[in-house]
Image (cartoon, rainbow, N blue to C red):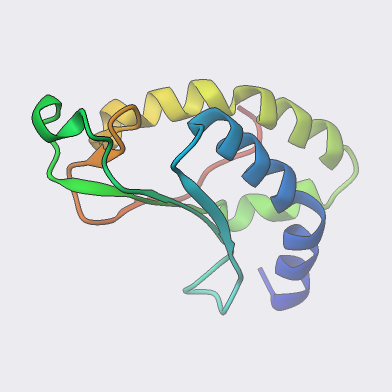
Length: 128
């Protein structure tokens, strides 16, 4: 991916993704776009939050929520014909994906905690 592709993705597609993730994660979670810098630092969605009060006793995870999502080479697929429909299907599936990532990535979205200081979920696709 190059800078022009990343800029188009950020301008045309990231806002609906950020809005959907923010809506699903609810209050207290900051969801923001981390813009493309280079091939090693692609466009990401960053979700972060401090632990919920109930989490002091309720979770086995020691770290506050600090998750980065990135799509790498999949971004180019959105820019081809049919990209808008692909995005709509993806937006509908984000809730199920977030739930699936919890167990695999040691994340507890309810308490806003996780098992590692930073969680990076890479290689996401838009065919979900």
